[in-house]
Length: 230
Image 1: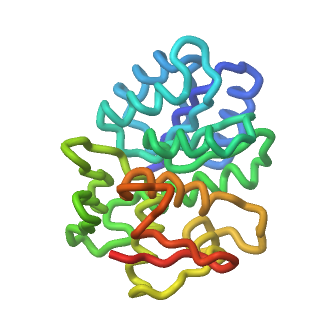
Image 2 (image 1 turned 30 degrees about the vertical axis):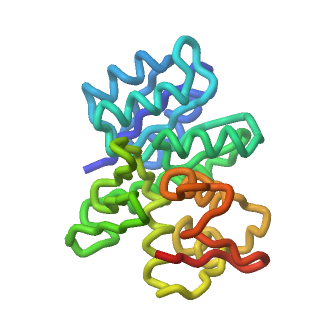
Image 3 (image 1 turned 180 degrees about the vertical axis):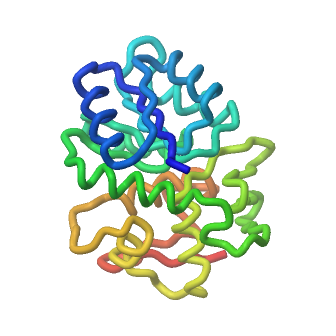
């Protein structure tokens, strides 16, 4: 079965270009020109992946992302942004997005990100089917359902955030090189300036740490990577 991708993008040329190129790659593509339209299509069609622009008329991409997750959409959401500020990227991750792609981007990069997101979101991947949970003080993380339970509040956990936690957990307290995280999770190598790992860690800390500024669980080892302290 072909994967179904929902593109929520208000620029007609961009939306058409994404649709044509992704259809050429073998995907079924649906397009929406606003957040409201995207929410309706997502409910009707249950896409396997969503490409979501931040700058949209009406409700913006951040609010659209939040509502998609509240509505129960579990498919990966990749946010498209022309902004370079890290805070915008982290905000999207906190609201339930799985990754972000900064405009302008190449088709090869986009397709690689989509394939990685779809691969990570397949049922039973990468775990063997058992229910996976982790606890950090008063915070309970359900890796199977992708939810964080904190002080009566439930927060979404992205696919890549889950993968980072799994890799740090499986290292048994050893430091995991950020280059290894980037390669194993995103399939990217030799990209020292790529901030994907760091931005996802910032988002993770805000969800599971009591004080994200002074983390006790996800520890930075400067110049190398991260380690997990349960």
